[in-house]
Length: 146
Image (tube, rainbow, N blue to C red; front, side, top):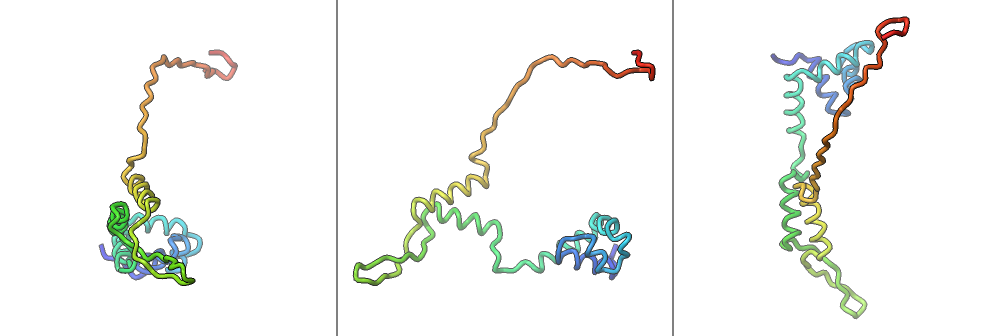
């Protein structure tokens, strides 16, 4: 089912601030029903697909994707990535050297990758074996008798 103009306007407005009520109002829905209309519109598959497509179009190529972040962390961990470091010459001046990551930087990259892959999580299993006792303490009649 194709979206009508009002639904498209709602989706475009929702993308701006992720506020369904305000997006519904700005799209032309009544203030009285904006909250319920906004929530209802967010459940429509067509609107969700439209917003996902719009969001994909707005993703800037300058923003790193998840895969790129993981690749960079891996390069730092392996010492393959280098960065500019200032080194004093002892004559009152400095030179810029291209240095590999320090041990601290490599450990931090390992920690972040380990956290991402759940390496540092401890799985503990607790086995509880005890009897469960149910107590019927609800009165049957209004006069207080069981």
